Image 1 (cartoon, one colour):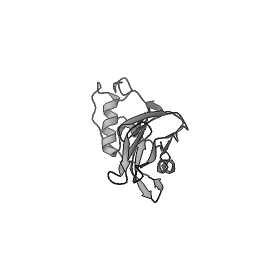
Image 2 (image 1 turned 135 degrees about the vertical axis):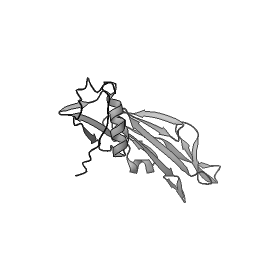
Image 3 (image 1 turned 120 degrees about the vertical axis):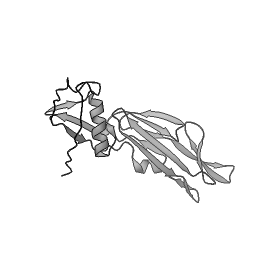
Image 4 (image 1 turned 60 degrees about the vertical axis):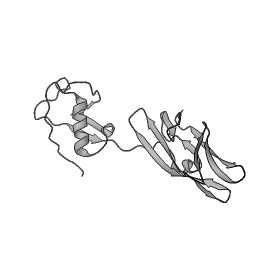
Length: 167
């Protein structure tokens, strides 16, 4: 069933955040994907000390790994569009240089192919600058994150076949 018992020693003054970090390390997943539950109470406040959270020696805390959330549409990225698949705002970064916030369901054309000097294609970011070229440096990255700790990084390759360009 995927259940795992993790023993953690805590002091009454330790913070819930420290417990979340310990559980995340034991479960080998990012801390942002761990929800802690004490009975029917969700422990959201990482700054709350474990004593005030009602945790006692020998108590049982359930650590639940949140499901991964898809932030961007993979097919849209291939056409140089970043499409927000979530119901919240996300931040999209193109090759760490250009950043934009997309509202729920919104899309943004992050790049356009440019037939440079009639000789070869560059991929120009709509926010400015060249992010890839068919001659060199064909790889680029798109990163997305939301306010809930979900994030993803796409490593893409600029491809040119005749006059057709894609990622």
